[in-house]
Image (cartoon, rainbow, N blue to C red; front, side, top):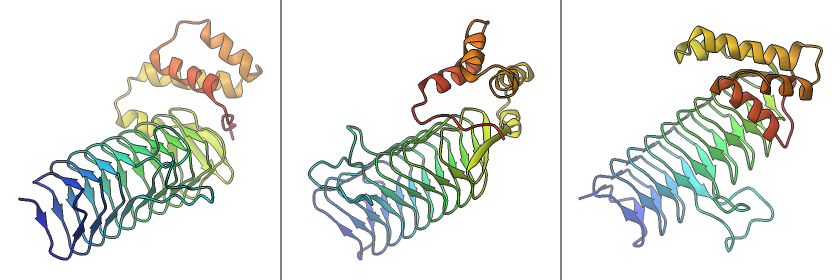
Length: 259
């Protein structure tokens, strides 16, 4: 049987795996799906329609799938929050449901959300990211994989953060941050390659060198961005450099400049 504290309030139409633990004074609304091995601690509120995969931990006071902080919000058109497996939501985390896109707000697998983190409506968060204490994402933000967002950083709406990016504490992100880089400052600038992160991820030296060469040409050569991208595209590429070029080509908000 599920291990549900007697003070918890569980809607009769919630779908909860028999292995799930739910702590005191938590609320689980209708049509919520909670998968195998999840642990919901005290005073958690999981809002209607939220779906959660396996082995997630939700700590005290977290709010998942709540109404977005958007003046145009209408319950008739909102989309529930979708969560994958093996995520850890620390105390006071607040993540809004979707309101303006077909897929709503979605979270992948293996993410660690530190205390008082907030993600706005229609955000998309990938896999294996660390989101620092009191950092905030506005609506429609996309976070790739293996990203580290430091404490108190703020990311503007419609911004895209590439894979294996490091965002420094207190950074103000107003444009896209390209893969494998560090974003720092207010407003942020690209301050270099995320060399420590790439080494820890065991990227080979030749791959790190190719990434560094690509960014030197894009940011530090006498070519403009278009010329640099075209030149790199006409040369043999490794997948990581192709990822950088595609990121620049797809950017709608514009890519953050170099410091």
